Structure formats: C-alpha cells, structure tokens
Length: 238
Image (cartoon, rainbow, N blue to C red):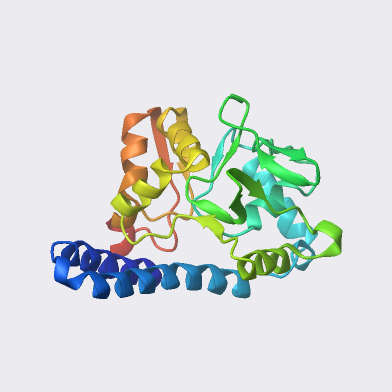
C-alpha cells in the first residue's frame, strides 16, 4: 500500500505539471521517478518472494487447493507467483488452471480473448507475465531447472519488465488495463461475472475503486467477504 500511496502522490504531481509548458523538463524527471518506483516495486516483490515452488510444503499446497476447489473462476489481484504455483501442483483437490496460455515453440503465449473456458484471471497482471514483440508471455515453471524468480530477475535485467498494474489510484490502474489486451480481457470477465462472489484477502480500498465498479456492473447475486482478525475492528467495519 505504501508504494501505491507514493505513486498516487507522484501521479497528482505529474497532472499539475502538465498544465505548465515551462515545466516540461521537470515533468519528465518526475515521470522518470514514477516509473523507477514502479520497477522498484517489481524488484522488491521478486526479492522477498520464495525462490522456488519447492520452498512451500505439500501440506500448504493441499490446503490452498482444497480452498480453491470450491470456485469456478479465480481472479487474483496480487502480483506474486503463489497462485500459479498452487494450481500447478497436483493433489486430490481439482482446480481448473486454464489461463489460456499455450505453448508456442518453447514459450508460453496468451492465445487471445476467445476462450470462454478460461478460469484463472489476473486483472492486475503478475510477476510472471511480460510483453515481448506484441505478445503476452508467461515465464515457465522452473524452466531448465532455473527458478522462476531468477527467470524474472533475468527478464528485468534485459528490460522485459513484468506486466503489473502498480499505479497509485484506480484511474491510473484502469488506464493501463484498457491499454493492454490481456488485462482488459481479465477485467471484462470480472464485469460479466454472475452467480456468487467470494473475496479473500482484499480490502476494497480506494485505490481499487475500478474493481468495485466492475463488481457493481456484473450479475453477481451474492457476495461473501472474508475478514482478517476481529470483525469489530475499525478496518473491518469500514
């Protein structure tokens, strides 16, 4: 949340500076700092992340898969690799892991928005997604025995940055979502959702107003909200 607060402040500053032509050079510096903070967020996440899927126990995987097996569609607003790792582990609990990435040569490439059977969505992107020559690609699970986090760090060094929506407010996030085919497809799927919605680990914060808007537009008839800690705390009451 601290990163998003800082980015939001920088975004306001850029908006003000755009009204002053004589401040163009300063505006470029501020914009460069804004982008540097976004890239720093990516690096912080990847460095604090478990290095490999083997760092997580079978018991933990089984618990996660048992939980996810209750749902038909999964929308993940986090950037990390944990959901990707969980759905690719096998246990007695079935989880539909169709994210519509297909093997093209030696790379996993998103095949477009025509598959109605897609069940895993990342409206804010993820560390393992990146754009390359007009395609949305996904890092492979420990390809060639190279841990995914190490693969991502190599991609960053080669200027292939993870596709993540890290802007400081809902308007900035929505702008990036609209300008990317994969992100827009994931967001559209959320807007068209029906049935029952269960939220877990999400705060309904101001910076995610665009997600609240998507939920208000869909055909969901019932919403369950998981709370952290005591239900009567100020955070949970708000």
